[in-house]
Image (cartoon, one colour):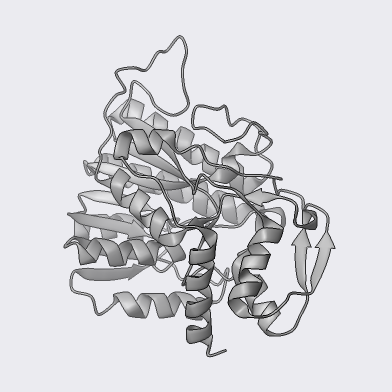
Length: 335
C-alpha cells in the first residue's frame, strides 16, 4: 500500500514507518519537526528512515492546508495514519491555542483531504486522556467520555466526533486509537521514563506526582505499532449490531470504530520507578508531590474490542520494556 504517515519523525510515527516499509509498503512521512521537544531527537529518528527504499518526506504542518493537499496529490496515498498532534497534558495548560491549531484545525484539513481523494481508510491517534474524570476501571470504549480534564483530552475527543461526522456524511472509513502511556526506545523526552532516567543518571532528584500512588497502563512502543498496523489493515464498515436506541461510542451505523491500545495491566508509578532503578543500577532521590492539574489518578485499558476485531492485544511487561529503553538511552546519549 501507499501510506501517508503524519508525525513520521515522532516517537510512534517513526517506528510505524519502519514497520510499514519493512513489509513492503511505500510511505510518505509528513512532519513539521517543531521544537516542542528536542528537535535533534526527531532529526535522528528521521535520519534512520531517510535511506529506506520506499520512504519520502515532506516537512510541513497539518495547519498548512496547501502543503498538506499538495502532499496528498503528489503521493496519492491509499491509506492515511494521522499521528501528528500537539502532545502533552501539562503543556495544554500553558499554551492551549497550539492544541486547537494542530489537533483540531489540522485534523479538519486531514479529514477534508481524505474525503476529496477517496482515501480507503483513515487511522488516527486518540488518547487514553479522553477518559478524563471517569473512575470506573478498566476504561472501556463503550464508556461515555464526556468529562475531559485537560484541553489536550478535549482535542482528542473532538477528533473522534469529527471523524464520526465524516464517516457518516461521506462514507470515509475511520478508526480512532486511544493510546495508553506509550514508552520505549526513541521515546519522547517530556514523558516520565525519559525525564526520570536523565535525572537519575545525573544524580538529580525526580518529581514524583501523586506521591507515586497513581497507576498507568504503560504500553511498549512495539505493541502500540502492532496495534496500529492490525487496525490499519482492517477497514471498518457499518456495525451491523449498532443500535441507535442504545448507542455505543465505539462503533456506528457509519464505517467508524474506536479502540483502546493499552497493556491491560496497570502498574503503580512507584513500582515503575523501582524497575527503572534496577535497570540503571542506581537509586532515585524522590520529591513526592501532589497530583498535577489535568492528570488523572489511574488508567487501565479494556482491550477486548481490539482483541475481538484484530486478534491482538499488547503483552510486553514493564521490566522488559524499561530494560530496552535504558539500553537505547545509554547507547544514544553515551552515558
